[in-house]
Image 1 (cartoon, rainbow, N blue to C red):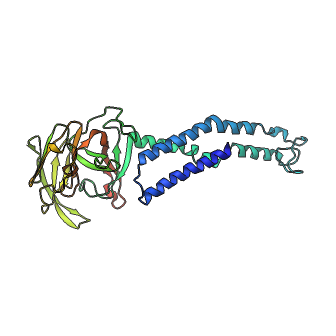
Image 2: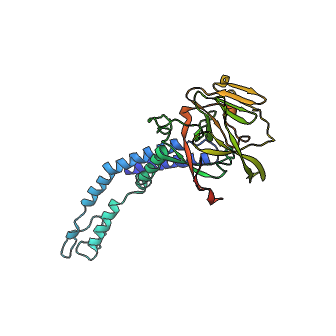
Image 3: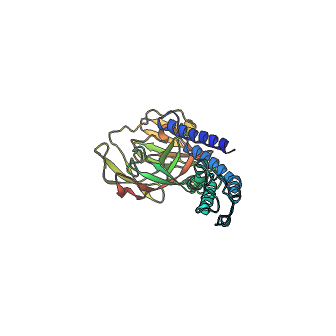
Length: 335
């Protein structure tokens, strides 16, 4: 039984290592939620087997050894496995030998140490990441100036309702996404990827972005000019504006040299709800969907190009920068 478990555990660990290696070199697309769920289930099964079978078995084996009190001078009982002439209970050190033998029997073998021993940590990470907060790294500049490339952010996983990992099915109601929220979601054309944008339109809204001015349900969203923003990667200043979509205002960038029309929009679901022109786009947001835009308006691949985000693709609400190794001053909440 023990030999079988050693081989089985080695195969399981090798499979996880192979998956991680294939993801690292780009051979496969990683699904970390699935990997973490499997790791939790497998280590949990080992932990349960350890508590219900292997640990009691080791304890019984340890109790079967001679009592240390018998290993006193004058006793003639030999220790199991002792070499001839060394290890008789009456000899000095016999009690210590019994104690060490019991410790060896009670010690968790490597294949349980790497599975059942890791279960509490993996289970804690699984619970935190799946139901409370999840960390993300900002990979692109589509949310500049709100979020910069390299920002490490936290995403609230329960504000919009708790969802089951992997299948992403909502099990609690939560609050619906509101205009102005910064939301992480599964990219509709490729759900294995996570995107982050700002909620601009909620179900039933008519969103118009014409000549770089945002209008929602016929009402123009007021903006206020701010000092130009230095985009360090491009080493160029861009006009910066303050916009208020919901309860909090936020900043955005507009590139005056970029055209107003949307070039290269794909054939997405409910595309018939959108009207494209040389001046921009007007879209009616269908029920159960959201219209997303980046704060870097002229450098963002968003709903103008690939369509609406279904409610089932929602991951959570981004709310805090917990680290930026190039700029510690970035740490803190954002809107």
